[in-house]
Length: 284
Image 1 (cartoon, rainbow, N blue to C red):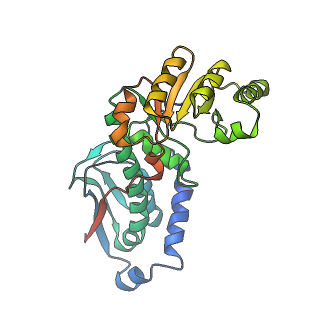
Image 2: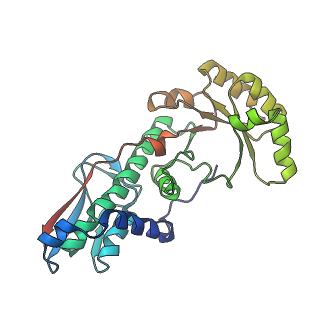
Image 3: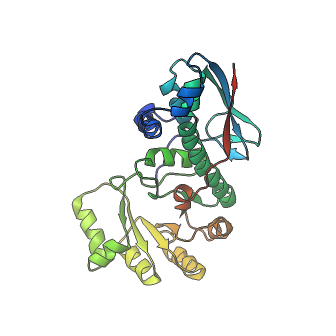
């Protein structure tokens, strides 16, 4: 698990993604805007929070506007990671009306989706109340993992693996394909990877086998509360424990009280509802 410093994303992580998203939406051209709006008309737009949310992805939304109108002027009223109350102005954008209209949907798609992830993440972090570290997973929109994991950081949680090359984890299907957890652990050690080894365990028998093999992190997946409590007791002083599977907002406080170091939540990035944000334009 990596605690990545909370800082703005490098534009290299999203500039080409924004370009492709705009091209997807634009096709052969914005037929309505090109027919209705004079190309010399100027406008001022505001991004407004319609519900309470954690801002995430503002620079990415701004990039969408700037790619179509490089001379647009942006005034940020809030920053990523900050809470926007209903009615709050997140940012103001002034420029030519036509490109602002054309970029609107793409900019909002990024800002709404990432702010939704950050908002849900903050709810989990608040419910955990500092008793357990909330982790994300690799269950992210394809090709948008860097952005989704950034949104999780905006919400105050910690990133798990960024990819398959970013950690050693023996999961259920690995175990099914080799003779034992011990064999899989030994194979990783023989490969010489200088990383902690994590093993997914779905029963107390697998917990004992993983602990016997000397794993660094034990992921207890979809166990009953009593079995989780027992697994954590057995692992104490031997391995760190990550609770996984079926972690909901209703349960996270109770799970945090069991004594594990981590709880991982796929919903942060695969099921977060989009935040309610609007873009309102007027002639300048």
